[in-house]
Length: 235
Ligand SMILES: [Zn+2]
Image 1 (cartoon, helix red, strand yellow):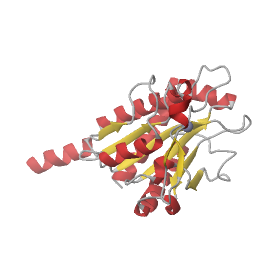
Image 2: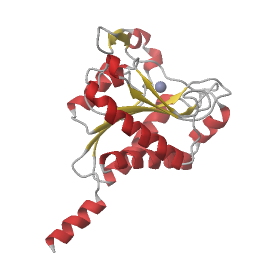
Image 3: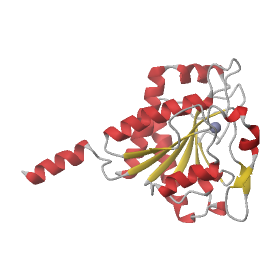
């Protein structure tokens, strides 16, 4: 009976015992603090440095900002992962602060000893371009090159689950593959744990911006991301 009960709990809480770091991109007060946001911080091996953070993108009318969107998606995703048993560590839980810088964003996941970390963004691409893409680290500036392979596996799961959620692949980055590896992102370079970054859609495209405003589409995105995390941690 006890064994049966444990199996039932494991089935209900597939992520029990795991830690997931959710890194909502940017922050609402970044634009008002350019000196803090533009200062250079460590961002990879070999003395590579980059600006602390950026303001993120927004629609032309300012009604949809990336920082608010990414926090909302992180919250929706975090609730789903917590219900599946994961310990969820959030970079931020409000949208009225500054930063943190990209090096601190990586450090949060490292200190939490996360099993997986996900940076959540939306792109400010060419207005005619649509769709999502996923970014994984490269070994060249990674402080822990061992994360490159598992991060790529996570990125592929993200792509598959966002495909499954009915999202369009990027028409302007990744040649239709919706997955690129980059060495210029401090949050990925400095991670000790497998990590990927998702650009959910192009805020600068009117159709994508409409999608990102809809609650049902935000829930669909969060469900797809939750499935990617679960399939990566519990293959
Ligand atoms: Zn961003």
